[in-house]
Length: 181
Image (cartoon, rainbow, N blue to C red):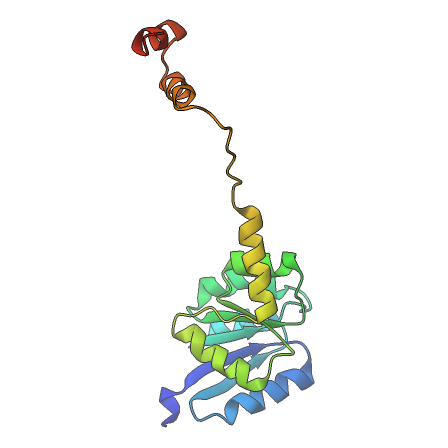
């Protein structure tokens, strides 16, 4: 496959060894290329903006010096259309929730296999939202917990009719006349 048709990946990771290992692994794949790797959001933001770099997917850590990965998501989204997949050890509800609310397209833990990470890059470009199973469970629980609780007050149909007319602004006398009370 010619170089220009490869999927462009950027890695933003402060751990130098992990960043190099991940970059090297990505570059062994015929469909992907990791030409850009950064140790901080500030470095990535500056270079992407100033060099007009075209990237398809950003693999982003949360625990970065300076601007955190979660804080960096909206800033990155202002200057690039790249999909952002979190790749982190942070699996607490707050970080997961904030990353997804800020615009992350996926959320993986660093203990994911290299193949899972590569498959996730392809998945996010196909419109998916890659997540580790444990993260997906957290997200489902969060949605369930945030869903409004439906309360059944065991009202009769007549009581519901009266409430609807009250909501519509009718007076008690108007309601009585309308319902023949």
